[in-house]
Length: 220
Ligand code: TYD
Image 1: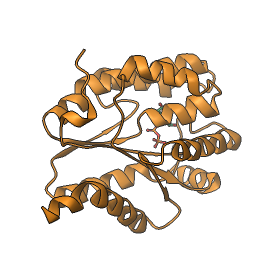
Image 2: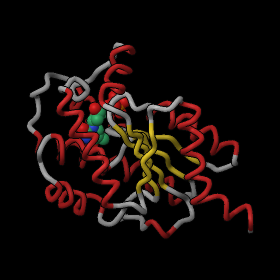
Image 3: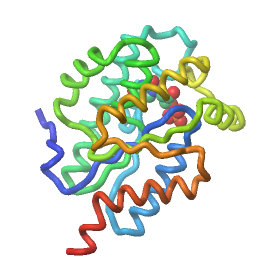
């Protein structure tokens, strides 16, 4: 099975995570600009999606009514899309030496399906082991903001998919889930205050990325 171990390449896999309206898409774009300035070849991608068939699964997941899927089916659909995303997009890029920055990855499934939908950590970890073996991001930035701040941003944009439209209690469980993930994996995850202005958030993210992966390069 063509699973790429994280240490087989110097290319990095960075994921951005967070609840609704925490500004992930904006921050992914700003991070991409900074990587380009630093001459780091990279691709930008997203989940669910990031490859043609994974995008088709995304459409299934995000359209329809709130109760269209039961939480376990949703979990399986997320990992089906993720496997396709990795196989078609993420692993080939890393093998080519390109960095990959992704708007969401497995922590979304843990926060949304595992914690907020109540499927539980163990079920997510089991499917994750089957789907990805030991593959994981080198760095995960968790954008954290109060639920009300995020909801207001989404409302003002007039957006909202099947999951965005869940109630405040659900979104609070997502936020708490992310903070718990960060507590459990402090080496991989960095929590950044997303209620600050976008430029300040972008600077905080860049400090982490630069400090972890690039500053050493400048000293070499
Ligand atoms: P998207 O429109 O990309 O929203 P956002 O801007 O919030 O990222 O929709 C993705 C939605 O899917 C979002 O509500 C989170 C949810 N999701 C899960 O529930 N589990 C997952 O594993 C992933 C990747 C996303």
